[in-house]
Image (cartoon, rainbow, N blue to C red):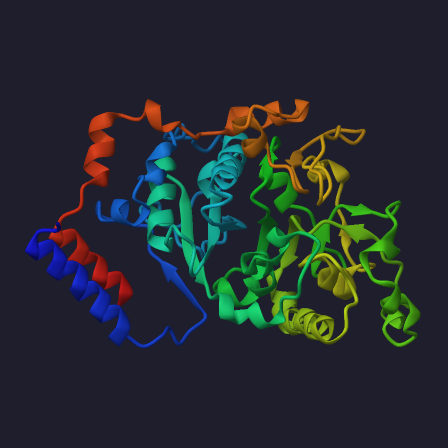
Amino acid sequence: MLPFRLYAAVLFVFSISLLLPPFCIGIRSFPTRAIDGGDAFELGSAAWARFSEAPDYRNGAGCAVSLNREMVSSCDPSLVHIAMTLDSEYLRGSVAAVHSVIKHASCPENVFFHFIAAEFDPASPRVLTKLVRSTFPSLNFKVYIFREDTVINLISSSIRQALENPLNYARNYLGDILGQCVDRVIYLDSDVVVVDDIHKLWNISLTGSRVIGAPEYCHANFTKYFTDGFWSDPVLSRVFSSRNPCYFNTGVMVMDLVRWREGNYRKRIENWMELQRKRRIYELGSLPPFLLVFAGNVEAIDHRWNQHGLGGDNVRGSCRSLHPGPVSLLHWSGKGKPWVRLETKNPCPLDHLWVPYDLYKPIHQLNPAKFQSLSSVSASTLIGFSSYLS
């Protein structure tokens, strides 16, 4: 039986949530300040505390000096901008990816992360903000809410249910989500680890009028990414008539956001998604619209920056080996994820390359006193939580 004051607090929060109007904007950002212990109530098991604090990586000699050392602004021209999605399902992978980036960066203090969080994820954006701050105390970052209704009516069924997650489409909206002063960004999936200096990827030029850069794989069978109905339609297939399209993976991209915004590429991608809802022209989720818009006009980046496919195919998730050549980034695209296979004691050989960046701490290794303090909830905490709803 709940104490009367606690019961009243819960009832107050519930009543306020019913009275408040729905959000009228698609994107909001949260400051990176610390949040009170009430967030432990939201997750129950205090999942954010299951990550060890990362080492404090500092700039090397010759790094550009920030204009404001006390509070780094995302508009600082010395920054390398990285955008990633952040959700409870891929959280362990995201943390490992961030750790790998700053561990190998020559100027880790000059890296700024833009995390896009789902509106209805079990872990709220405020909880995720606290998690990132507690794991990476000196990290420059911002967390944004991505409203699912921005894209939900454009998503069609896919070969794998995970590919239908609205957050997979957040990359389409980076030009709108990030501030106008951010004119260039590296997009990374959550199932990667970077084993080289991210500044090398950042400094790659996008020549001519190219909007994105990514490793291309021209030996891949490009026709398989679209249905027979697409290729048999003379009007639709004509989209590639003036291009020499090659497959590229959208999990690692360098994006010119100035050209992206000027060319309204978000709308171009949405147009293909709208057509897909009317007549099926592809089977995979967020990849084919990018291919339709950009394939054949991509700045080709060295393959070392996306050793993809380590998660196997989209059905079985079988083990795979590395592609020949040097490696700067490992990518577990496909069904199999290293943290899942390691947890189930069925890892692939290459999954062990992911382990050094994993900061996950099993619950039995937590400090009991810390865990107890995070799990306790007071009436004042619940009332404070209502301020998030407003």
